[in-house]
Image (cartoon, rainbow over all chains, first blue to last red; front, side, top):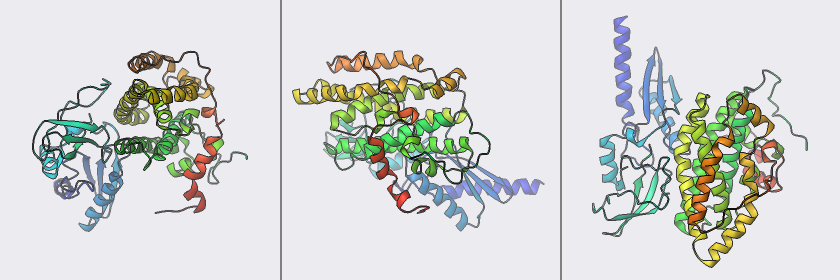
Length: 172
Length: 263
């Protein structure tokens, strides 16, 4: 019995390690673990259940991610995979790892600034979140539009180097 | 044409009580998402083209969550796709507002503002409601709805307090569309029953916050807030305007032309 439990724990740990290789199709430097999308892994006998949570409601990458998880685990010899989609608690950028934030910035996307989500304070024409330019690092930037290239990003421009860049919106 | 059930439907157990309401929410988000998607590539400026497409995508994603749940509540083997794409116009339960044509940008903004002001406040109420799945969907969607309401509110202000041209267009859009706002907060008999059972919030409790927000936005926009407009009703009970049929002929084209298609 102990051996079975030990095997199951070992397998669970292995699956978590494997999932670190599944990357966000839109931002390939980020893994789904960096994003905080994977909420749980459960091994029951031969079956592996992975619980993920969607980021934005309409995010088209979620389907791809689910498929990638299946294919990766299949390639590693695990055909019996179930993917659970968990809506609650709702995904928040608070779950994004520090490593993930660093990778985002290196890639040219400004990472979310914690605590700046619109929330229930409808901040009409309010001060934009101060975001650091991922290219020249100046904080002298302004928001062009709340809606950027994808559902999760806003469109900013740097007033120093004049380059436009994406900002990963704080979502909490 | 008589409304028909999908061929696979069997007269088995009755759908669970929330089914018609969840279907109504799904239809509202889907139809509005479709309308907004019609702007794609035609926006007045690139950034707003992106904004419209993003909002459409959020609403489409939200509608999927509702359709999936509705299919489960109905329990007759229909899938989210069957519900979204294979019903006839009389079977849709979206309010009249969301099927109205885009018109010019001012019309789209007024339609969006009326929808967002209700939608945001409804979701805030639903996320604390007794149904766990509906609360989970609402908890997720309310964050996006907050951004939508901010966007449409800011545009009402820009258009109202902008140029003579923008103000003229906003006034025209309000005159055309304000009559469709009332349906959102006017409960149908079906909704009243669910409200009495505590499953759906009483819209009267949402109205003070909605009114306060509208007053604030219109004051900033220097536009008088319309009062005592007779509400046009019907969408939520399947009595739609002439627009829905044309909209569905585009929305449902693929599924109707290639029945049973899969990717």
